[in-house]
Image (tube, rainbow over all chains, first blue to last red; front, side):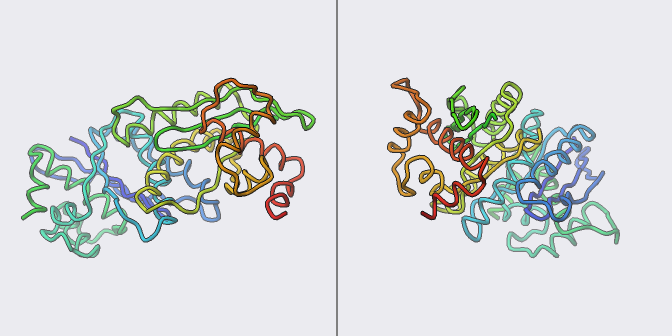
Length: 167
Length: 167
């Protein structure tokens, strides 16, 4: 099973492709989508959508995973994040790739054992679980791999992540 | 000049096509995009994007106009509106159609003379300005036509709307 994790952000959108085979996980690719500097906000959206479209075409993922968002610092930030999330998820939705959403707490818990883990702690565990060694790993890409891992764990046993988060 | 006005909303997205020729305005089409009932929120986005994509292909607008949004009732509402706005504007941005944003106050002022006009008052003036008579006109479609009218007025003389809003 190929899972595309996405971490949409106004500045940088992380992505990570995780292969899950017989419970064994492997990172096939990860990185960040960063629109060219100097673009107006709306003009960043087609750049993000085109990059995700390319990923969908080249990876042909069986499913996608993304952190759910319910709150933001303020409505201005939420509005911007909504645009970016819409642009990033649209190519997946239009290609019929199922998009699964997991709460940030649930993702952290599934990867580190603690729902309150810091981003750096998540990155350390992502490195370990996917045997990435010391190769460079952007924080946004790490977050994208983390949500893909959470989906991989929850997928064969749908209750896994939810149970882990409650534990 | 053909202008596509768009009024993105979580439930219904209004659209209106206005032709501006020698300062004379004519409505070529208007309506609302309403995803089938029962769809999950994310699954509404491809429906909206596909409908706007069809409009872009069939109308080949010279420009698009949309109300700018800075505030929302809360961050949850803002996040949803951001997704819908991203999905609705993406086909325009990807097709290279220039997207122009106008504040709600500016649109109301340009159409009715008052920046504090009610939606019903805007609809009455849209009917008059575009000679639509008593034919049915959805409120969201009226708002889309209104922002297209604002763009038509401001376009040959970029300062028009801004000056009208300040007056």
